[in-house]
Length: 146
Image 1 (cartoon, rainbow, N blue to C red):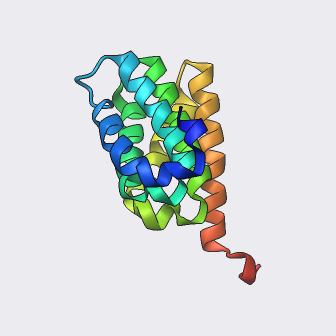
Image 2 (cartoon, helix red, strand yellow):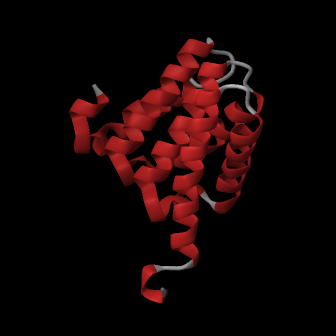
């Protein structure tokens, strides 16, 4: 459904995002948490900058899930969501989420890539790290300065 709404999702993100973020709390069943994270990733991709009020919270939730969640599906979804969010928000990511949140996400992704036994978590983490590193390089070395 999110993909069908497309660019109009920005206007509706304020209704959808808070509900999905509440579904990501540890009190919820793992399948619900994983599904909500994947759907949030789709909302970010569709809404782009319209998602910015919740981007920092999503980054924190994903970093926490990668670090402490015991469910592999939730960790897969968290790594995937970070990659999609980074790709969707691009250069604005650091400004919108804040550097501390992205540092935590970077550390969680690095740990997931290096230390997980699940190959899919490691692949999603590696892809998300690639997206994040590209954003950081663009921030440090803007095209006009290259």
